[in-house]
Length: 172
Picture 1 (tube, rainbow, N blue to C red):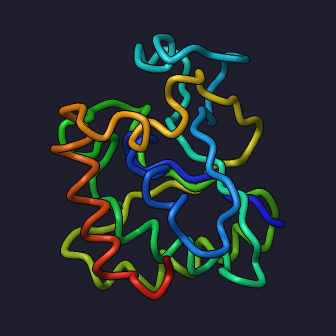
Picture 2 (picture 1 turned 30 degrees about the vertical axis):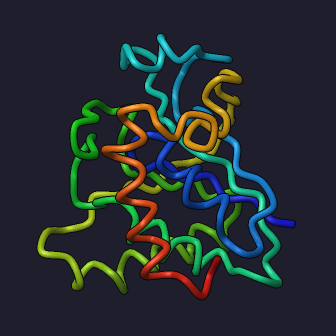
């Protein structure tokens, strides 16, 4: 098993998609990239901690590669928006990759270089050193599956999930 730590807007959106991919064993919503140990959601939302909302993806790299996960990652959010995804605005919503080793860092740089020409604007996704992952509060875990009729889930997550299912049906 391998792990990946990615942030691309609200962690609820990422979790809802990545947990449906063949080879992904678990997806955990959390926080990474900040100064405070064990931050709360409220602290992260204040933008005072420096953390990003991220997901930890535990996957079988015999079924899906890190590179394939990144290609999906770049297709399910807008990596050209700085510190935001749609209505979610702030550094906690930045597009970020936290490589867990040199190989992941190399792959991340290669994928960004390969995909940059496919976007109208430059990819602003950062590659930041990984220091720690802090699991988000329990009510954030499996949020979409537990709250499918909540407004944010219907308006923001459901359309992203449907787009993913159409474009990557071979990965689910």
